[in-house]
Amino acid sequence: MSDENLSTPEQVSPEVSFWRGLVSRARQLLRDPKNKLTGASRLVAELLDLQPASRKILGGAADYEKLAQWQKQWDGLQLKMNSHTDLEARNEFMKQQEQLHAVEFGAEHSHGEILTIEDFQKKFELIRDSAHQAQQKIYRENIELARLFAQQAANILHEHCVGLEATQADLYKRYGLSYAPGSSPLVAAVKQAEKFVLARVQSDEGASGPDMILPWLIT
Figure 1: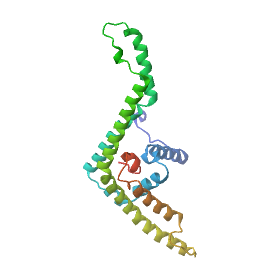
Figure 2 (figure 1 turned 45 degrees about the vertical axis):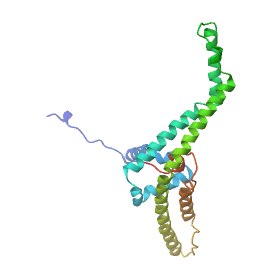
Figure 3 (figure 1 turned 60 degrees about the horizontal axis):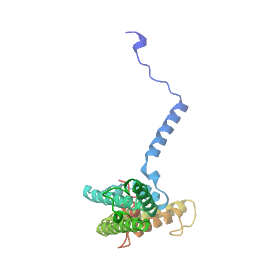
């Protein structure tokens, strides 16, 4: 067998190896769904991702399926609302006016079928109201499930905060500094994250979807 048929391992310099690793890591980060989050939502998602206990949040496929179904219904209703604005009502009115030129003198034409722009606006308003009421209904039906997710997440964040406080106090002590409980910006941020998680699910009445009251939950 000739040497030409033998594969030679690629010789990679340390610089090339470093940049390849960096590009690979960058690709992973760009695909990370947490990058779509900002502020407190991002902090909560990052902290939960670091905690092994967060893998056990509810955990049942049925619970996640309920959330997914809620989100799907909410998205559909929101799409209906967004496609029935006053602007769309005006567009429909203009379409009607254009069509009238073709059917005005037809034998089957009836002036009773003609809607004013106010008629269209009222009709679209009723559609929006109906969709909004449906969003409120599914919110009431699912808010307790959302609270269960939020409470378990808050418990995990609380436990992390307790451990972080102890770690910070020990770090200050090793540097010969005095530490006042709660003075660490990291501890304060985790405490605020815990409050943020619970605050989003406090109201019994609402029309929000899961992605609005549980924005940190990445499945």
